[in-house]
Structure formats: structure tokens, C-alpha cells
Image 1 (spheres, rainbow, N blue to C red):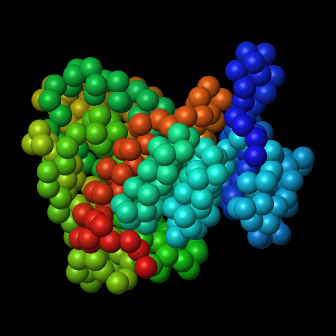
Image 2 (spheres, rainbow, N blue to C red):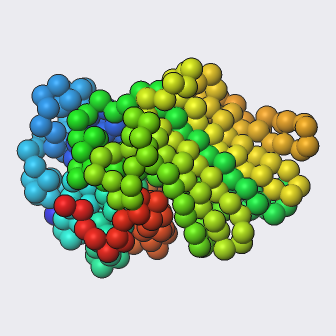
Length: 348
């Protein structure tokens, strides 16, 4: 097993973190391409069962070695592991990698429930290894402009936050529709981004109350449902009294591909991220004063791979545990509470 870049190597500027990729589907390849284009890491080894996906990954990094398993990745000369596998595997694979002394960057959700996320974070802290999760919307230029204004207090006391993520399509993998494998439906798939974005933008305030309504094909579901939801409405009440309201869905008759927004309303103004023309990728940031609107950022913005690029840069500086990873547990706890399930229970 390799050690992460030595101080002397970093000082010479000759070395980059060598990464192993576990999973090279579309999302895994996109994140691989991001770090390669940014020049912040090398793709040294890849574990991917699909021949088609493996060929596409090899086109991005022809020198990367193909291996068959996570355990085989451990035997390669790498400095960290990127996990882009189905959700049911994330926590176990991340814990195994961390226990081998490997820093980890993992697709969301980091786990299907708080208990799984907690186990990953504990393993990272115990191993003193860097842990990252792909909460990519934090890295849009729109949120880069919005968050500092929120933190400055320029729009006054934020008392209401509205977030939306409607996807006119549904996932194309069958495991998404099995709650034992996915952890849930649109709430854990899309809503987790909204919960994370709101709490991160507000510096992770305490949530004192949650309420949710989950639906599948128009029928309201009970707490801890045995089927996945395709529509969810949730309200979070913060200790400050601020109300966060979020809505997310799959296959909604939305009149366009997607509706994505995050709006923050304060006593002295408002701020919002909104997708443009139904796009999943193009966002505009706006600032509101009464009836006036000012655009503060516009597309194009190549933001999709910035989370892993940021993690790779952190890795090159310091592979040790970053306490900010403990925030992942707070987000997972909110998701569990919205599903109405036992926070200490492990998924089947």
C-alpha cells in the first residue's frame, strides 16, 4: 500500500495523488475526467465489471490498470479511492477502504441510513483519513456567490428557505426502486442534495422539528415505507425559527426536464439559485430587493466535478481526517427523520 504524497514530493511539485476508481459508470467516469482535466490527480487503477464501461474509462486513462475487486485496488500503488457504485455498497466499501488507510471520495448517499453514514465517519476519524462525499451542488458558481452573501448578513435574518428538485424522469437502474438497496426514493436520491445545500448554506444550524409527506404514484405512504416514494414534501424547523421547505420528485409532469431551485428569503432581501430552461446543469443566481431582481451569476458553469477536484486538492495537502465530514451524519439524520425510521436501525 502506498502512502500519500510525501512533503518533499509536494514541495517539488512533481507528484499528484494516485487514485483507484471503484465503479466506472457514467458518474464515475465523469468524476475521473474532472480530476484528469484539472490536473490534480492520476487515475492509476480501475475496478469495473462492465466491459463497456471499462473501455470508456480506459479511453480517459489508458495507463490505468484494470483490477477486479476493491481488495485488488488495495494492492495497487494508490493514495485514495473513489467510490461510484450502487448505494447499498457505499458504506461497507468506504469503511473497508478507510480501514486499509485509504482516503475516500464517495458518491451520495454515503449510506442508506444515518447508522451507515455514522459508521463511515467513525472509520475515517479512527484511521485519520480524508473523507469526501459528492454533494456537488455546493460547488455551483451560483452557490459560490450566494453563500458569502448569506454569511455576511446582507439580506438580514433568513426566515424562510424554499428548495425544489423535480426530475421529469426516473432512475434507469432497478435497484433505485428497492428501498433495501437504495435507502428510499426521490428523497434520498434528490432531496439529500437539498437538505445538504440548505444546512451548508446556513452553516449547519440545529434542526428542532421535521415533517414530511411521501407519495408513490399519487398514494400517500406511511412512515418508514416499504416502497420507494416518487414525490416528497418536507419541512424543517430550525432552532432560530427559520422554516426550510423542500419538494422533490421523480417523473413529475413538470413541463420540462427538471425544476431545480434554492431560494433564501431574509428581512432585507432574497437570494436564489434557479435552473435555466429546464436544464439539469445550467443555473442562474439572483438577488432580490423588493420587486427588483439582479442576476449575480449565469451559465455556462462546469461545476459537476468540482467536489472531487476539491477533495483531490485537499488530499495532496493533507490526507488526514477533516472534522467537516461529521456534517454528513447530520444530513443523514434529517433524511432518516423525514422517512420516520429508527435512527439506530441498520438497513436490511
